[in-house]
Amino acid sequence: MDSEGLGGKRLVDYDVIVAMESRHRDYVLSLCPECGDKVVVWNVRDPYFMDKEKDHEDMSTNLENLLNPKSDSKRDRR
Image (tube, rainbow, N blue to C red; front, top):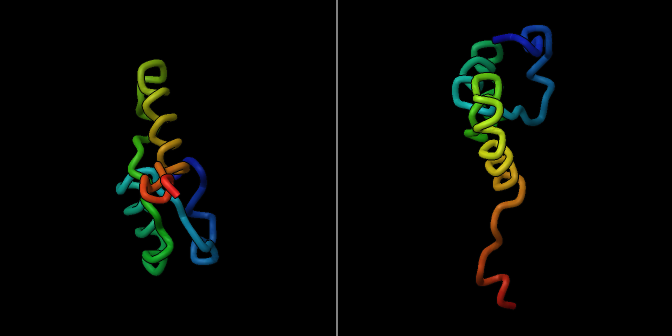
């Protein structure tokens, strides 16, 4: 699971660590237990294990929603 070489990185020096799934967070924390307050889990499936054709659109939609959340309708009326 260390395909990006996390074991060789000084994770404690990062301000934010984004994990796609909770199992990725758990792996980061196994390497750097003191990084708990720096890890953010996006809860998107790991594309490595996805059916490339079928799930590409789902992943794109999930990431788009995370990066551009729908605005509050009350604010839109102003």
